[in-house]
Length: 515
Image (cartoon, rainbow, N blue to C red; front, side, top):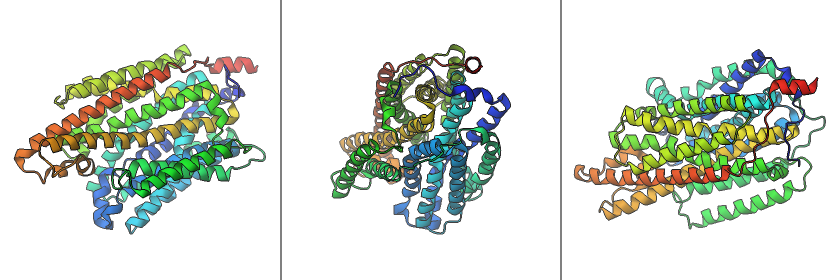
């Protein structure tokens, strides 16, 4: 594998007009919006679903099924798009996602809903992977940062808009509409991309699919995510099931590595990780995703407990953070397009994110005011927005064109994996910290896990005189969590120092070379 200074076969970038690029971008942005939003949109509708469909014990699987399917299939879609072409694979992903959405909307039992959410996730993994890859196909390396930044902004917006829209649809219409809304969005994505994507990479003449590699990878990811999402929550860490699942995941991973070294067209080419940029960027993305989702998931919960608002209203707190992420992603992309350099952008973003999380961690009793949101959450969002899109640009710029889909999908895979593991780890840290403080305060009737699962309802069983002590314990738990996020941001910053910066060429330079 070569360590390059330019993307080969890049003359294709000059073949797309600005109008075609905008049409493609609009289509893939809508596709990304659907996939990212459906990771979180069911959160506020879960109690209503449980009431209508029954089987409260299986309720977490409505979220987990989608997460498992979308994360496990992300790298598979990337490789398939290299083999069969972007347009065909994107259309398959959209159709799977829409079929899953319709079936979810008409589900008559919790078992059906979980199964159909898994099918929806099979499509969602492709939408997440291909959105960033297609931008890499139609835009020159130097201009990619701007468009990848916009896509990153869409991802941030969708992650926060999901719970808000889920609450609105459930309260004003019915929970079925959180799935039916995908139908017009999916139709628009198909219409916008079908014509413009006709001239994209069309695949290879005689593609070979690594079926066994795909099965081993999906088994590995599923085992890992089940361990981190279920272990210590509903199943003790030391239980035979968790230990056995861990051993199975490790065995499948070893088998996957051995198999991928021998197959002609590996589903996740291991030679990519010998490229210095890829070897650094993917771990940075994974740790940064942990930092990102600690804010998205736990900041609204903090406000719910402090001010007593409902989940939908608390979710509005994240709007300043989303605004910051959109500004950071877009501004960072424009800076890259203007200078042709990218390494300093994520370094600045991670330093800013670490400082803001440190401020959150050191101010446990800070007022949840508009000024607080502006001074803390907007800079935090800007910092986080400067990281993810840049890593995608760096990876795309460092690999051969034949591996563009697989390499881009690897970034999406590490982002999803890091976010999933991060939520589980932060939840475990919060629960353990709160548990010890509640026991020390003589309040054994409520646990940190109760708060994560039930929100403010967990306080209802406590006498009024004990709630103040419980809230103090929760605030300290959140402080511990945000200090951990600050530490991880510093870790990600240090790793980014080792990121190799390769030149980014503009469309004009590519056209001149092709002439």
